[in-house]
Length: 470
Image 1 (spheres, rainbow, N blue to C red):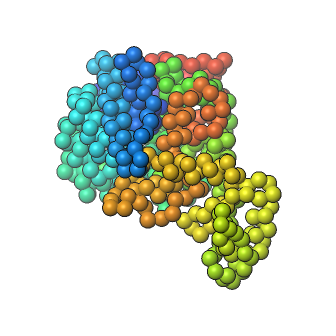
Image 2: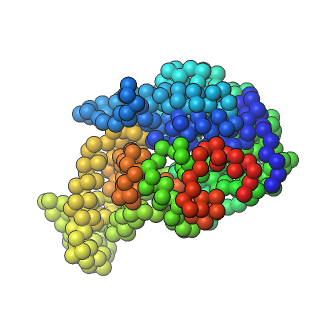
Image 3: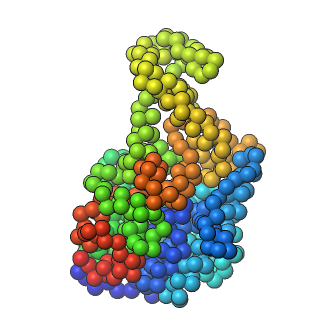
């Protein structure tokens, strides 16, 4: 394997190894601090990060506001305090080595308010801001205000071009690097555009080469590109290292830090990672953000798939083949289905999926009465965690604070399920029945000899093995 040399990132020399940020309590200050202490870039998530009481006990994020706007304010307060807490932990553990970055999602609720509050409360503790899930035009402005470097996450040269021309050229000196997150390989939310086929992955090399060519046009030939998604062993990327076409490259590891001793996920979750097989990671379009995302195809995802498959179109008046009357809701308000769809609906009812729920696209989905009650309760309890949510129809933009569309029962409350799995990872049932984000290489845990006999390394051991190769 080629020797891995330090590169200049954020104004200092660091190993070109970056811990990927994983939202809602999964990348925390402990994992980030240990990664930075190993000489790389540790990243904690500032997406509704955890806080602790004076005895060090986790403080559950409970909401008491009567309205979504009230709960939205509570959520932002939790997020700011949690981000400050995790920044302090990471800074102390790093002990001056490596770099500590905070990761935020631009589409999370009050993203600007949260990261501004975190940076104000943790001045001097955070070296960089990583941000994706949307087009974070104002990221450079926030970074410049606090004198930290910024690292936008993009999935194409086209996206970076728009960001640079609109905003980033004004703060070029603080652009520490550009994260290329492969939309077919990375875990969590993915930046697939409307012109890209989720079922036809593209080779990342030409896409990253196109990004570098564009960056050179802007005078950014020495600014690192961080390859994110699908990175496991560096020898598999040897043609990228010291490649003059690509310039300085660093590599982001999002999935592998999950299976370390310092990782905050529970033991049941860690054991599940060791059992994954190729094909167990599912690129889906269920997220309330509207983005594609990659997750383990567990019971939670299977229920969503089946829920969406039990779906028929309806009209409110008889139109064309939509002539079969069907009663919806407690009052059995009549809508019209095609005759074949009416027969399918009766079949689903016989199987126990007797509740028909309307979607924003003039379709009905069929679920059990218990699932219908859960969906409605989750929509009612919305804590407004996203800038816009298709599941609950919340929008952080006034005066209506609504997307203007019906709430969509084909999606789910992302805050609820991520908080549950993040804090119940010792419970195998919780791991099976909640959203488990994952990169597409997670199946390699079970076949990689490094993890034989259930071996779980420390972060330091993982970094050393990445550096030395297999």
